[in-house]
Image 1 (cartoon, rainbow over the protein chains, first blue to last red):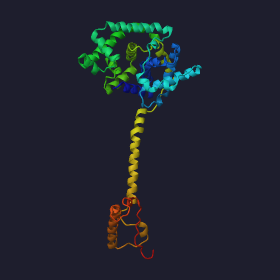
Image 2: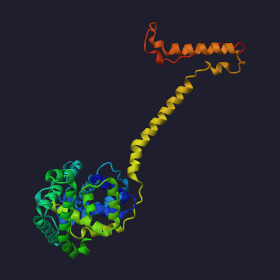
Image 3: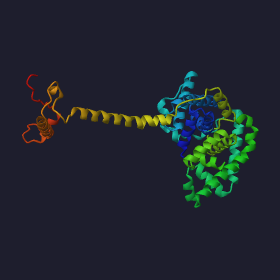
Image 4: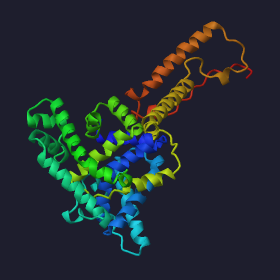
Length: 199
Length: 169
């Protein structure tokens, strides 16, 4: 099942009253949405507020979502409108619609300078997470590291990775899972420290 | 956990994906893994982290939101997209067929002309039917006749047939 179909499944479940399904979408798209919002709003605390408002608006509008576009494209539009309304309400200039076309939603890329936006209280946590992930990646056996890089950074399918790495597709599955589990285990103490905050 | 890894990569078959999504909703341990795997993905892709409190804040807000009871919109959309035009087409064909059958009688030329008339001898009826059949054939092929001045127009002309009036009508 493709990524879009998975999102559609989650949307349909949320439409049938499963709030947890929508929470899985929040977990999936919160950082991507935040990156979009940083193009409109510089203040990190405001980005958090607007992102939260956008998700709640999306939840309320979910009955009208018919799956004609990808969920993220739809969420992207809601995010942009929420940010614009926020800026207007704050008496600031909102970018014109043509500056942010919804067709860019799937291929949205930002500059490096936007990536370190964070509130002071979250900054340390974000840095620790990034440091742990990067250090664990460096320490991974080469075949695990290559597999997860090809998947997460190059966006290759398992079949394509199997061809590149010249191994069975089952081995690719196993390598990517083991890489994720290794990193997740290294993150666990960090996330548990802030468990009451994060979960 | 390995299935969650495959699910987020879109590498599971449809049925298994649905099963895993249902499990994800029920099992907090799995949903936590879903979140961690996405955190890893986004960190590798250098996405913006909203901080440790964000998910909790959204969840708290969602708790105050009413539970959605919306129709299965995808099915509704598919219905609107495919089933309704198909139903309209069937209805259209039915109407056309009904009109064609009711406006092209193959029996006697006119029921009005015969209304109130005494039953005709069977020999007359046979002659009339044969005449009508021949007439229909000629009318249908009239536009191909070399005698027709404007060929191809005949099919658009309304043809009126007249039967012999019975004396006394």
